[in-house]
Image 1 (cartoon, rainbow, N blue to C red):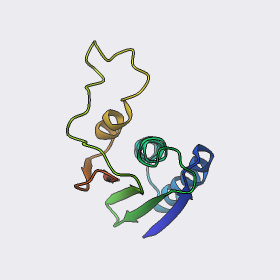
Image 2: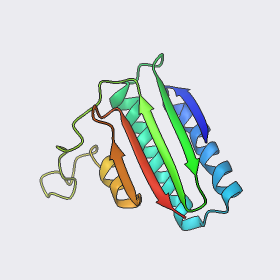
Image 3: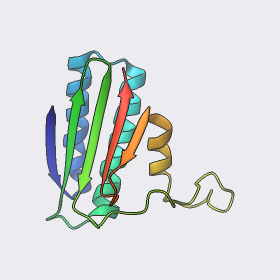
Length: 130
């Protein structure tokens, strides 16, 4: 398992991207799966920074990576209060199509093979088969 902890600043996404790059190359993950992991991880960390930690730079986001040879798992945890992940607006609903926000969780669910939240909603675990 490898981990990275960043302060809640969007600029720090680069460090998370670099970690995904490094681990994907080390594990020989295909370009297709790599793209799914990268996009989902960036969305999760972005949500943790902006929504979970409300952009408060002194709060941190921790990203844990685990790979067992068949599944690559990414867990993103913020220091926010969490959210109700079961009651999000559907971004494909015509009433929501023009909203600039609200697509991150939908994208993550579409790309990951499995996605789970802790009960409070301040941690997401995504699994990708590779």
